[in-house]
Amino acid sequence: MKKIQLLFSFIILISSAAIAQDTIPPTINLNTPKSVCHQYRTPYDRVQPTVTDNVDSGGNISIILVRSDVNENVKGIYADEYQAIDKSGNIANVVRTVLVSDCNSSNINKINELENVTVFPNPSIENFQINIPVAEANLEILSMDGKLVYQTKLIQGLNSINANNLNTGLYQIVITTESSKKVVSQSIQ
Image (cartoon, rainbow, N blue to C red; front, side):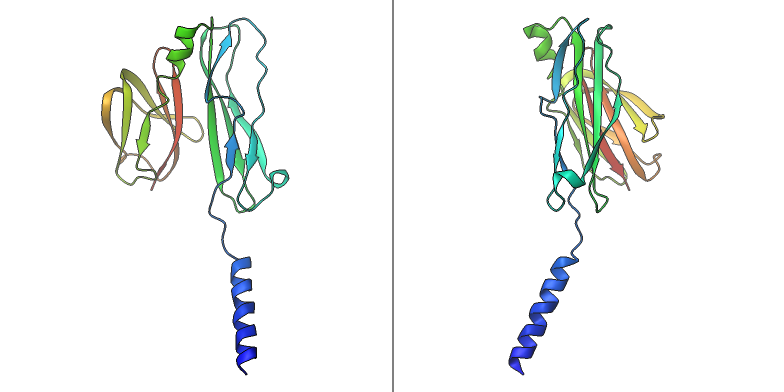
């Protein structure tokens, strides 16, 4: 009788492990730094990212280019945004910032000036904070269909953003300076 109970317990353990819910999103590797400088007026060859997941193998996860506004013939800050979705519906987003310019060391240092921006908590309910390391930056909050829902100026240090007027959902937080851009996904609950 003890052997049957032990066998039954083992089968239940294996069954529950097999149906455990995957809640971890895939990981996207850009295969480049998050911010790159592209030489003005030269062809832009986008480096394809790769994706890994804790459950699904790479061949079972699709990765798509959500948007790319890079124009190698116009100096400015652009972005390549990628998204990967695993079989459980977990979503990962990553953005490569592209500075189209005359790439010299001072421009390369400028594109990394927003690398240490933090946005927290995520998800948020009423307010969230944005900590920026530069004197001033612009903030735009975009809905997932690309509509501008909020904009303001940020100052160096901690900035509190009131999310009470935002509907529940996922938003793109776009922070820009004259020479740098960072995009972060923010969930409002």
